[in-house]
Image 1 (cartoon, one colour):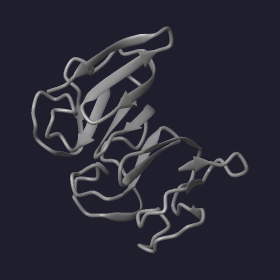
Image 2 (cartoon, rainbow, N blue to C red):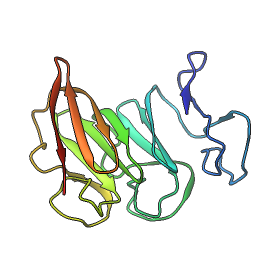
Image 3 (cartoon, one colour):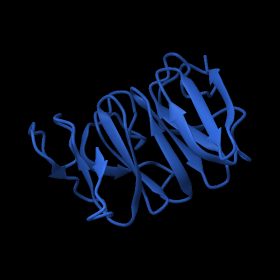
Length: 169
């Protein structure tokens, strides 16, 4: 996935997969425009088979959704971007893991959604979530510049350094 300086309102997906965001399931070996991304695209986060974009403070995702990683309250595959439930504004950073996604809200809280079999959403459960849920202990006051996720841990980096790391199981 790449953001192009020549057209900052659109992202282009560089993955040769069938969830490129161009409205088809056609596998491609060239760059394609992601349809439906209007506004200022300021960040892109790519998981194993899904992608999310931060657009004018809101989050849109597309791709595989078998584990709710798109956050649209479904498990339906989406070939074009859809709004993440409850996160259409007020988001300052996003991060995507294997099959889950997290967002840092303007109020300094972290919300995550998707696969949770190893507790990677940080909500003190192992329940898959198809919409964003608060990360326990990170509901407000986090002055972070970015967040990172992987298969299990959630990390939050402040402007001056690391807030902390934890395996959320």
